[in-house]
Length: 515
Image (cartoon, rainbow, N blue to C red; front, side, top):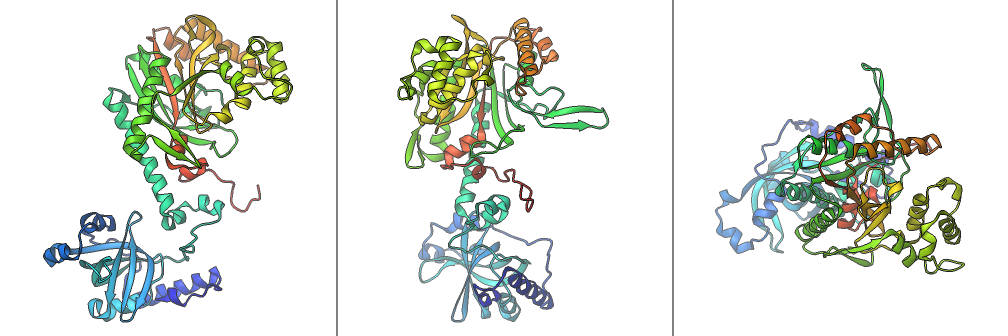
């Protein structure tokens, strides 16, 4: 086994040279270096699932033929003990031991064994049994070569310690880290549960365009591309919202989409330019209905996937047990603005622009001129500064200013307040929803106001979507909608503090550019 000849001092280049030489020796032994297939009867996970709970007596009670397997796997450990060699084989999910002796695999198989390295893929045909120490194993009757790992794997005890390499070379991270594999298994189960949840409640899964003539549905800076045949600029989708509501207008009363969105914005522990959202729309419902459905969705997902509604979050615990707290944006600012220098934030300050500016000054909000004459923007900034860092437990923040909610319907009792909520969990926004504005004339007016803000320098303000206004003119029923961040939900379910930990291939700076 050439791996045993590698000293810790050997350079990467030397190890690659040695592994290539081992590959050439394998070829000289008559083994195809890149066989097309291996006639597997089981994967490692199948073996562990079928016999992992059987003791030695139970295994021996089964006929040998019933325990014969043709098993492929990647070698993650090689141990030589006397005249036997033990290989730890993995299918990426589970591990099982292969017990190899010369009298079992013959001269050819033994010669192959001498040229194997950690990370190589092999196929073992043999019988499932337990060793004297009780280890579930496969006694090899034959050994074939499937693929050579030409680069050494990271140290088995420490794995990938370089975070940049961990994200940039996720394929290596997945090979050596069971924790990473579990993270993405949980993420996949979250998405699967979401689909089953909405399918069971009569929602229709749909797909909307990822390239759009108008970037609408959110306040965000889009990516721009160009379609050569039509000679038009197109925007990568920042949100599917306006298309989903077109479908509600068209007669689908319940729709959802698990979608990829793209926003040309910064990268942080909570933001990736390409991300996954769940959006769902319910006709004849309002924001309160969506909040109740969200509680049901999240609590149900936690119980099924994790077996509990109590989720670890660092050294703290998050409870997804319903009902979640409801808190107005103004009340949140007052509650968490008690200790600002110069005196606490007072409720009476939050009803006027001068009062908001005074409160923002004491809270340390800088560059007040960037909020212009829009009080709602300043209130939202105060909320983000003072309250958001404290919202650990699931909290629906309600009563957003209508002027920063251009797609939302106002509360029936207060035209200045949107019938809108955002859900915060783990001190980050997880969801945004509201009763949808379905008056085409009012929507047109709000679009025009957004265009005016854009002309003043707000490059995240929405464009005027004439076709969407026309769609509303055909009559969209009372509707509530919501978007939930799948990546952030996966962070919560896996106790991951960076969004990059739950995205298989997060966006990275070009390698070696220094940018």
